[in-house]
Image (cartoon, rainbow over all chains, first blue to last red; front, side, top):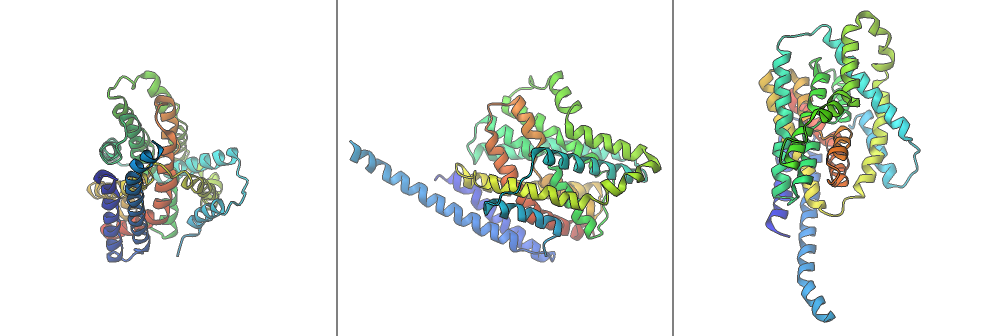
Length: 66
Length: 309
């Protein structure tokens, strides 16, 4: 996964956390924003990990085939 | 505590995820959406009888400008971060510049449940925000203005079902005088119940769309969550500039945050058939709509009260 792919999930998670903080300041529930931020961050990390593993294993797979 | 009307949306998602079969015909779904559009227009028209203002023209122009601006914010995000081609980026940008009548209806129901007042002319703004994003999205996708011809304007503006129903009922509500009161038991008092039924169906559809999140899922989820926050904040700013009440600020934010899943997909299917319709619908209906209904709308109502106090 490139920087471009990972940047938007991170920006979004940061904005969600900012909204969560602001929700607390104005006296409304902050849980929704925080949960979505956490889920998105974890999902981005898993996706990033999977993408990097696939990239590394491809040349090996190609080598075995040949 | 979750609002009772919104709870039906959650019930719909749960039913879909658990595989429960809830028979909901297309005819009923279309009838319910027609009811909501007529009810919103009528309510606006009735309220407008007492609140006609010369500043409405200036406000309408500002709202159209807002509708033109939103897809221009979404497009670079889709092109740069999502690396989407011009056609798909333009199509999705159009969805996010336009509005969702159902999200607006949820916001109205929540405002009324909490006795928060809002400006009567908002149904007019809902109508005005339907079209500009479609035009901008198509121009961005095609790279020229050739697609905006007379046939396009006639089909998308004059004969557009939602625009026709909402503007028509707004005029009926405004010009009908005392006789409109005969319609209020059906269109006004039954509004929350019908909206709950409609949201049950929307929950079923949104649950179905969640399963379609595979390719580009992380980017699509991020975009579909970030864009309503940007649009909502921009809407809040515009409402403050226009001097709206607390309820008006919340509604303008919700209009900025919402994404279309009825009018724009139909227009894109017609004018941009090469665009991936599944991706736009998954983003607007599967992610943005639930995010708005469950999290963003209550937040923007609270924000409206905070900044409008």
